[in-house]
Image 1 (cartoon, helix red, strand yellow):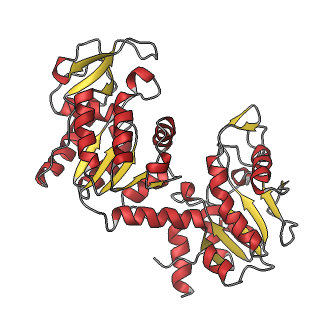
Image 2 (cartoon, rainbow, N blue to C red; image 1 turned 120 degrees about the vertical axis):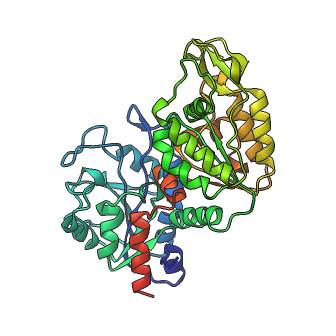
Image 3 (tube, one colour; image 1 turned 180 degrees about the vertical axis):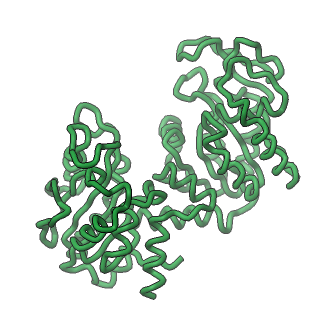
Length: 398
């Protein structure tokens, strides 16, 4: 993969006095006008520091939420992000509005450019907008893996027009880790795909069925697979119209000599609530009024045993309603097994990251991806537009 990197440019001295435009992913949750969780902001800091230390004038931008183009509403502004970024950097971070026409920034200074998705044409990757943004800088840096699957003006268009285009350290690390997990994995390779719907993750399941040695499904997805296996699921969340697709995935794995493990026991309740009484049942004994909210202890133990022996583990999605303590046991056991495995593990997706935080295993996961949709699309083998743009530039400048 031929992509120029910010690290390489900094080491060569090529950034001194240059105007550097960094597209970060600062799309963080806000509560009452303050940053509620700052993981993505902290992840953006190394690229910014790298450019500042190399003597550059630094501009940073990101999207936040889903604003209406042309206006910056009170919930759209990056002001709380600028305040938190200033704390992390230990220096002022000025927020700049209406920046497409020009930005006043000096070497050694960092400014935050207001929510880029408020600019008309951003989401549609308007070529003229991309050219105007590219004219603001000498070096464009994409450090936002979480948006790499979207072809937008600040993620793809600008990379084609900026004088120099490169990957920031976060994007570089994501591509290295994902490449390690998929292109030359240590075997056996296990994948855990959880979530509510088979339909939203059908393509990833089909893709992984051709790549992995063990495919574990959880959550509502597992319920659909249970239906496909002829088991009762009561009133559980499932997609009966996806049963044939689930069977196709099961058949694809069986053709490779591996079974998709179907739960042998489950944890059920008669209501979806944190205080609902939890009951462990054999999978064949699920009643008509039952809701399956977690895998059972025997199923969890068997899956954990597989994971501890894996050479590579890819994790996207919990296996139960882990937010409710009574139904967190399955995801807790899976998380612990991943932490204990000697294999290389990579995890991505918002719910997965929340589970990792809840069970305190962040320091024992090989790599935690900042991407959700981009993580899944990379696993599927899809081309990420923002990465492709950097590759094209790297190849042409080689």
